[in-house]
Length: 157
Image 1 (cartoon, rainbow, N blue to C red):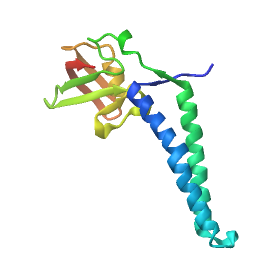
Image 2: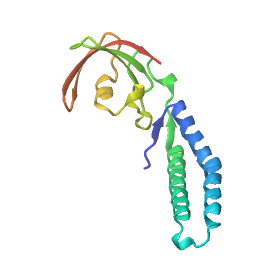
Image 3: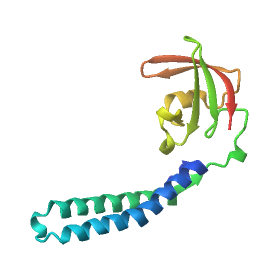
């Protein structure tokens, strides 16, 4: 059985836009690069041609990857997720009980994770330790470097 890939609506739309760009403008651009390189003559020793063909192969590979991901995508249905608990799609305000620092994390599907943007994968140790918690709950989360102690201050969607 093929495993579905969980995505938020935003993540699904982002992949769809990338696919459209690669199939449209990017394919056209690469085709023009190939035509321009062919005009230089002998293709056996034509670095521009080789580069353009390589870029074409990479583009086509990414198109196949995106088409597969989108065909397996299951969009997370927010209406079925408790609003008062930490689940995928939630934005969680946490307080580190050791340092008193506050952190804001969005719990997202693996494909949408981006730590610099505060988006952590639902399969990460931190997210796993928070899943199901409510505002006011505390958690001790095991990570490779030891333990983190957090208090959930707020949950939003």
